[in-house]
Image 1: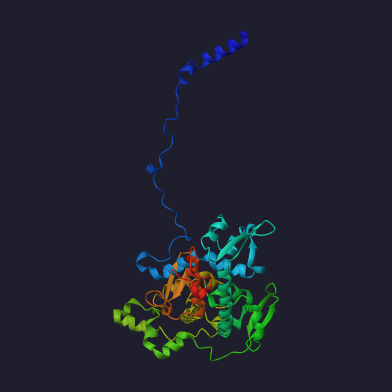
Image 2: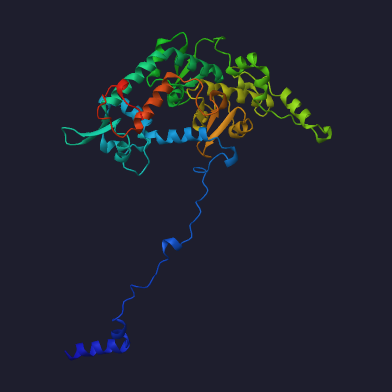
Length: 398
């Protein structure tokens, strides 16, 4: 006992203010800077978020189309993925791991994306006690309607693929590349099986030098298809076609040309473009002729797409087949009258201006494009009208 009292007294001596300070609290002291007084950090510049166009050159209509695609990414990708699943259903736990396949943000719960489109997707508890993701009855009707469109447009899609093969080097493209870009041209998911119906047009071979990939080859050249949209336009409006492109002529300063003279000189060099159906692989990469060929090829490529536009990823997919270079972006920037680049530095999209009205509306809408617009309208509806039927024709669009 005596030892215990001695030990306590010695602690008190070491800290004589111990009893005094213990009576006060320091919790009232501000140890952190309040949020409203903190300096806001400027967001770091990133090619993933930096817009590719500067403010004075931005065309709002095209930028909104890119934003729309991002907004409905879950709808389009989930529709495609679930359509290929048995019974069009997927276990919810498995779906939560497929953010890339289903198009929802990584790290987010898939349930949030499902709730945003209640007319198209639903979850239910199966007899096994597990939750499953599937289509609503309305979405099943839409899937059937889309299949009908695909069947009716089959010959048109076959011609598109034939033209792609005619533009490509050696007239062959791996089937996996066509499948990857199928939505761009409205090509059905089962196109790889449908090509067997057209032995006069296509031949499927195995490329043993490239991991045994299946490659689609052109069987017969068709001169009627080997005419580009630019060539048809040139016949109708030669001057308009010439003014569309810009290929400046390099000349010495000692020529001292006036502005109008420079314009006329450059105009002489604008057309004719090299046909995209010629063999571009034989051209010297850094010549003006090769650049004209690549510009004309991308122009024709975009003409074949449903919405007259394509992303950088689509162009890169066909880099080898179309003899494109890493300077494709700089090449397109030099042709602002024909092309418009939207989106961000990392994920930009090139638009063919000829395909759109001034208000950003497509001039010619493919049946698949009309279907997609209908799908997007349903995707924005949160609940059904009380007196409306489930049938497509009786839905009230808002």
